[in-house]
Image (cartoon, rainbow, N blue to C red; front, side, top):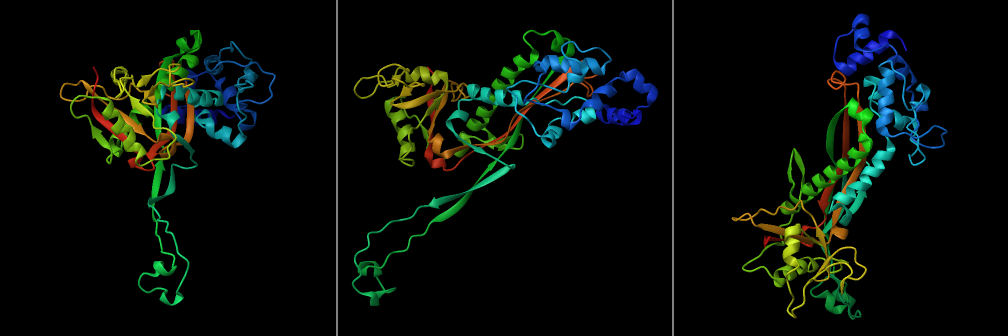
Length: 408
């Protein structure tokens, strides 16, 4: 690679005006080795390889050391283009070029497939809603489903007795089949970007044990899982809060406790859903831990507690607690400071498996960049994790909310 090309790439990365003299003061000329080596055909994110596997922290540290004119600690210089490991998925050359597009301009963006899949799976551990809903793969930023808002009617038809009455009067009485029309609509599911950015010092990146990437993997999953739940529960649909949550979508069955909260209120919540989704396999109830504590004290008309922990009678083999036979899902992202006395919360119930959609346009991708300013000047590395996801309901009548639920 020519010196002029290196200068051009660094100018794009830093926004500075450089010449050969200022270039020498900014970075060692041996960065050329890294830039020249990064070719799509040599990028390996998995598949058969004799090279040892290294963690993301160590790998990035070696890339940075080579760019600064230092010897790598964990791999040979020629091995730095491999983020090997049998668990990683092979990425085709054009896709690899896209994933590390920043590497050719800023010297840094490395996107390990291992982190993408693993962190996305971890998101389920921190999202109460995502695992309940139907996941829909998306090939663009929007996917549209046809819907039927008006149902059909079936009729019993007697044996035809007089065909001369066709089209006249009450033809059905003579065996004419009545016409039934359906009303069609559309449901749009849009994917939005949800991102987390963390900046760490290069000293921490070098010396941390366990590696910073292992720590960030769980932090990314917890932060994104929690943010996604907040959006699905009470998102406003605004420009900076693009998902409209259950609070804004549920209108038909927006219920409220009147008087003392009891078993009847929970029954109203659950059967408001079953009335519109009679074939739902189950109707999960979602609530804050403070609401769960109150539910544990409720009894039915026979004096039996309606809350059952897994393993208790009527909950054998269940992975979740049951409230009156329906799964209870604990979600601390539900507000628990509502009402005039800030001592109320909400419960949600719905046919999540059949009528709540989570659109997945892009799984979680982790990007890093140790060369872009101002991070390079401050000896730091930026980590960026982002997903592209969406949420919508196919029929809001199949969901219900119950407000004014006491927290104590």
